[in-house]
Image (cartoon, rainbow, N blue to C red; front, side, top):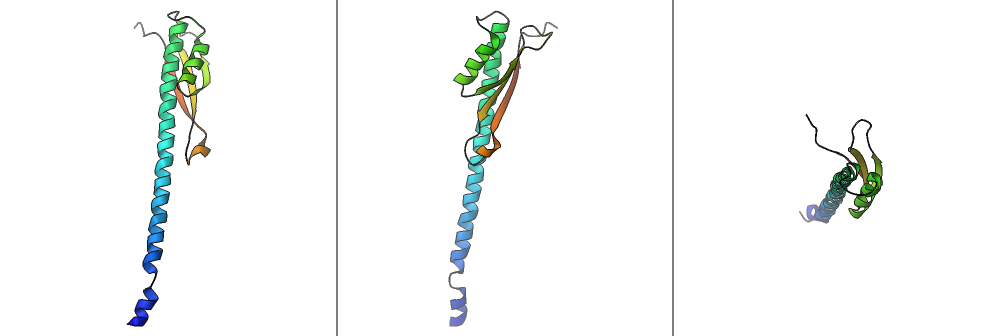
Length: 124
């Protein structure tokens, strides 16, 4: 009986170490996903706000050049302007693309991207 107890000595330590490692991996994965989701939401919000401000300028409701205004609004919301343009045939409409760096364990993925289009309401 003593021999069986001696052979099992330390086995719960190994199991505990394995469980702690699994929980650490799960925690790091959750933290990484939170960083990705947060960056995506920030990029989308910055794109929406930048597009709305740029569309106001494109329609003459606010002074300034639409893409310059979009860049300023994107930067004030913690994003970089990745692209800005006014589609042909859609007067007063502006397309904006913003980028926000992903932080945390998944930073190697690069940047989250936000896309938005704003302009006057349809007349139909």
